[in-house]
Length: 383
Image (cartoon, rainbow, N blue to C red; front, side, top):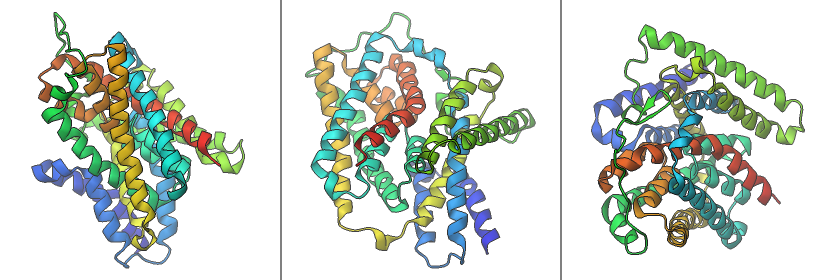
């Protein structure tokens, strides 16, 4: 039964990806959300065999550190040059707004939320990067599965309304207080981040072709090596900070590896990393028990809603002061709060292709720095 459980964790995400590719409605829901859903059903069904907890903990400890380097290998730091003055300023203003709002929310509801300082760290990570950062900080700060699932669930629900706002009336409302976007003379339409194209970010097509799978296996080997080195660093510190040290070391080594052209050019490393994140999502959801969720989760909902809405409003306020235009402000908020894949969607709704490349780059940079920023605030707020 334990062998079957391991096989389920390893290969069920592949079925989810296949179904998402085949059925549009499932694709709109997303493989990550489906992984959480089926994981919760499994974990609360009562059918898990004896000894499954050790398997679950082992998978949690391996998947995120293994995924991190793969997610970062395709990062191109030279794309930072595409962040023109206003975009870079808007990114900075958004991150500052996020820190301020998360700290205010922590002072309002912190005493009512379990693991409040860890939650604050996870919110910084997910709203500068995305799900991989949320998972990484969960591992680094040893957050309970119940808290992690609730944070991701509430984030998914509230972020959906956030996106709907931007693709409907957001631009009109922002334009009342912010200047309009000035288009470039020669708009750039070819959008890439390393080996990842915008419309290819969630595509696993061709991953098993020989020209793709062989280099990808080599990249996986490098990721295993980085995991081992990160594990070695964790042995040099107090046990309390071991996992935190490992995650930050692995993040740093992954970024450094992205500077090596042969590694940076390997195709599908980002997708491979996301597959390990899907395994993590399925596994950690199966560890969460409904009976461990109490009324305090409502305060967690308030905290997350306050973080998203408050950051958006404070970002608008700062943008008005520094005269950052409407579209740049919106695309930076989208990229940081909702992650890079949503950038083309919102840019299309705004009818502005010029903002896709800088917006996407903001999100990819967010993936790189999210772990550092999240851990930094979490440790600052730790009692």
